[in-house]
Length: 324
Image (cartoon, rainbow, N blue to C red; front, side):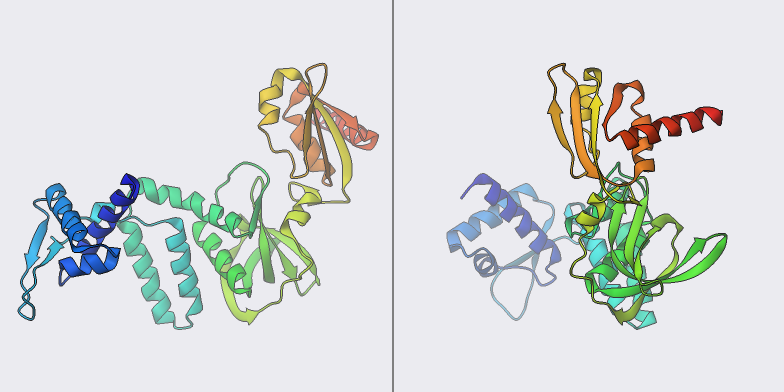
């Protein structure tokens, strides 16, 4: 047995001693770890050596065996909670129609967060979006941005359970009530929710930071089997949906390292040219967003193809200058 496995088992045994009110005996350790009595005795002895002042014997009148447990609270520092734990609690809360139960779960989540170290709690805000990505409900195209943790958790629950959502959303200086079949998130300069709007009978996207009063409805939807969040994003640059075009860019060799470590688009292909410059090719729509991206690279980038994009970019730059 490797030292790593032994260490994991000792930690697990310590957690068992912490969680057991009635205490554990040697047979309990044998059964848990499927080991001999001699090995169980060794594990118990090691735990006693590591925490000599934290273990107490439990007197049980119903049994002549010896039982031990940790002094209450002794191992609290080893207990931690992950973003997945909180996301799952939110998911369980969404399954209940009992408002009192939902309120009790809210209070439970608040209590658990109160026990979580601040440095870990801050990390949870970004981890939930990582969970959404890993489950296929989000595609990242740019840098990490902030979003309301509670709304992300609600969206995750709705997408996992294929339930419709309803929320308030500002459109043309007026607040509209939107009912949506949530399909996924695009994480660009902001978080964008992509879904099917039955009212307009088409796909729509909404800025998550502008969503208010979000609720999960007790109404299920069937996701379009042909829809792929990855394909949806491959047809756009950022969140701008247009007919895709084949694009070729050339970046100066002075920014080689930055370019090679940069994600322009999911379909990108990079090549080092004979002159040392870096060629980047990808297929995408979203001409305006592409020009905004190129502007950040200044004189270190040139548009090689297509001519239409080059002309659009020149017009874009002229408009910027004329506005100064």
